[in-house]
Figure 1 (cartoon, rainbow, N blue to C red):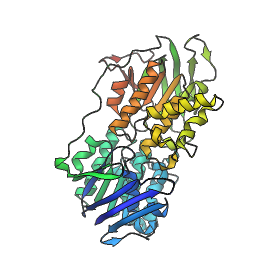
Figure 2 (figure 1 turned 90 degrees about the vertical axis):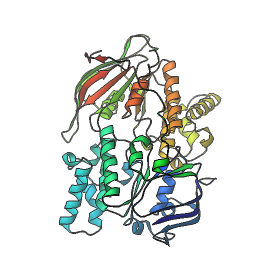
Figure 3 (figure 1 turned 45 degrees about the horizontal axis):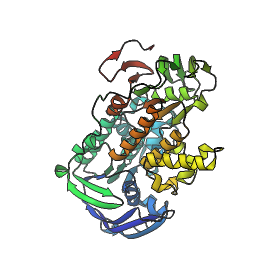
Figure 4 (figure 1 turned 180 degrees about the vertical axis):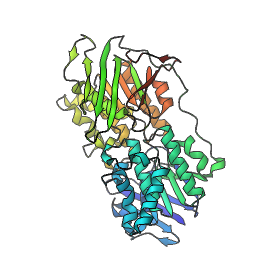
Length: 477
């Protein structure tokens, strides 16, 4: 059904091929995993299948891509979209209706389907992705994981023959991940869809795939049946004792009875009370939509709570600080929300404006080197993979040297090697006494890095876990 013949591609803004001599075939009804390090060309390969490359993202290509024995060269993206559906790494790139159900209905509506069939498809897709209860919620009020599931539901409702999923579970909690993978498995086994998946949650997706194609530096380095593929080992052990708190016992951030409601009536936080100590690393876990991102946006000052207080203290003097925004660095869940320049090194340097040029240049190089992006310093961030853009955002925040650093899903889209680079960056921050707050769905990461793990449930604190084995009963510590 799908055949690549010695296909190569170089972006218009690039100076080397992102894909080189790609040759493989995917049979009808096959489920194939594309696996490899961040930036190896997986997403680029996916975007060639429905014409986004080269119709929308320009560049130079060689070789052929065949669909049902016919070349797709020259075919419009809108024509290919009826056969090849795709869920992007960043769900914001394909959500544009006002409510969840309207967004899911957009594709079937544009196919000209009868109203009854369209409603039936939407209902089935919403149920399969666990979105029935929020079908009327405004899309811009969704969490990152809920947006991802909405994109998957929209693709499911279109019912194309070939489904391409580019990191479909990247922003999902463990339960949401299982739901989406189960949906993919059902589409494959019972509807006999041809499926191509890019996914770094290799242990979760591995049982449902027939075959694993490995890429590295834009080339295919392996092509094995799923039964012969060896799942990579876990990067870090469970419950590793975190680094010793460098900041003593002084409270640096005090949250009291915090409540936050949105204009549509949604109450996202309900009476949160928590004290965070200088030099501490605290991880926040919980289901998509539980209130984690709302909480850290309130801490940063991007959202104003409906009730309660947040007080930042100077770690040295113990005095309260009125302007906490300048002392808190924030890595967004979606790195594209904070990348504003057209060069990787400039993205770091722009935050160092006013510093002596030599010092700013050295800080920029050090920050990029820590996250493995120094060799890409002159690239346009738009040509980077999601994982590379995530690491760029990490480097930009770290270079500013704030007292408190907030990371909202910092490991999204990262392969084991680059996850290790981010962990090293977090380790360097902790060694320098920085206070680190992490929002994550990766429970192993939380237990590995954090002094305390706070579970957020329905806008409140469900429990506070100390990774060495205990549980705090008093949330006011």
